[in-house]
Image (tube, rainbow, N blue to C red; front, side, top):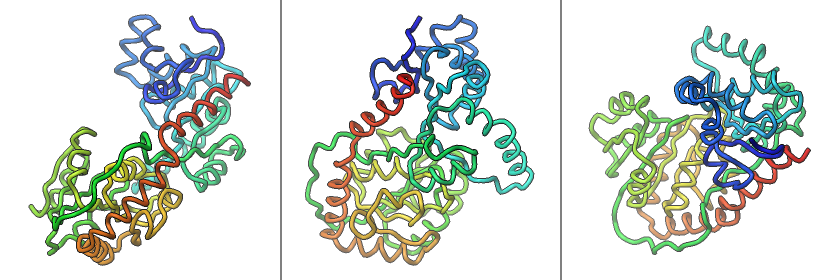
Length: 337
């Protein structure tokens, strides 16, 4: 069906890269009807079907996404050449359960790591720390992991209105790594109008911590989330230090919306913010510091405007367009080799 050199990638990447990339969905649609139907329901079948559909091309998968591990494993068995690009190579933190952590580590050493070493041409990481750490963890040469920084701005265009008013609207949202306990300790007794947007997994914990003090929304669409974000005065990213990439998408949303950020100073954000210039950073778990910095920003519109303007100016130097130019070159280099 395809000449050697084509790329099968997740839909967002296929769209951003353009030809010769096609989406996973389009590639699966070329398989027999039964396989296509099962691939939509069963991750194992999806991964094997993608590997089969891409034996002559380059297969790009997002690490941890549905079917990604089976696609890597099937590619390791089917293809002699390394033809897989692992996007957003992020290793989940260890489980709190010692039994689960032991089983996961055994699976990584005995199955995942050998398959990645055999099938992966290049892995894409988001920070320099991850490049060094994952190379050692998976027995890879550092050259097989390439850092491409996540963009914090989609287009680089547009302008923002001057910040005025006496509102005290604070928004916090997120999934992975969110530190809701610290957020609510900081908000205890504050006169903020606090809104929280979380996943269904965190819903009960957030509602228990909130005790009616916050407007809580569950599983909002991106459009609905960003609509609330644009009406906020301060955006809080209270996060736990897990040692893995997290928070980049929510930081991008705040920067684009022009909302100043108060964030936990975790490793994942080291290369993405300039402390005190593009965001206010606090130590993880420091509820008193979080309360103090949010209160200070709410009292100082000029400071909020300086933060948001500096953040957007820095983000415009590396937009989605730049990101996909770099990712296109990275992925197509595999097919050219």
